Length: 220
Image 1 (cartoon, helix red, strand yellow):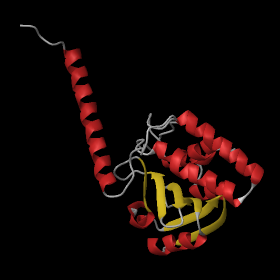
Image 2 (tube, helix red, strand yellow; image 1 turned 135 degrees about the vertical axis):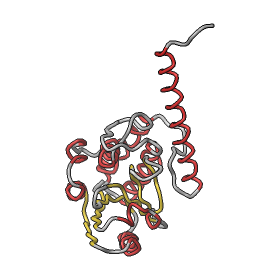
Image 3 (spheres, one colour; image 1 turned 135 degrees about the horizontal axis):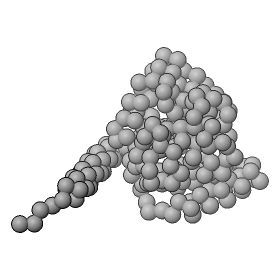
């Protein structure tokens, strides 16, 4: 009777364990997607192509400086660049620069997408600094909310109008999108499903649980 070497047995156990965790993770993402959370990319993509197109729109916006060019850029970032990251696993030390490969921490998620959109920023330094400093370095129209309900926060963002924002929380940071109809929280989160995702701000446990929120409109 042929025996399996301890090494091959150990390797098999690791592979099955990884497959089980991966399958469980994908199932969790599907469950959250069914609840309205976008936790997987909604389309097939070539990220290098997406970055190139976004940077072209970024340059056009700088040259034209018109409401129309800013809207085109904002829409592309929100609808075509950032969604490539949905489903990329969160990790406290995640620093990947490629969506769907490796892990991404909350600060690096924000700074990497902004850099890839065309902004000239120090991706690493800003990802590692306090979220309030990140907001101050990249945003205008800054507002602070201390011990305020998530409902009052969302209403304030609605009044601020259409656009992309950065929000800093007690121990977290992410993007806020006001698309003119709904306010969304886009972030790489530690709570399930533990990945980069888009959810309605009003329904976000992460936003709701934070006692402090600082938000500003990104300067594009």
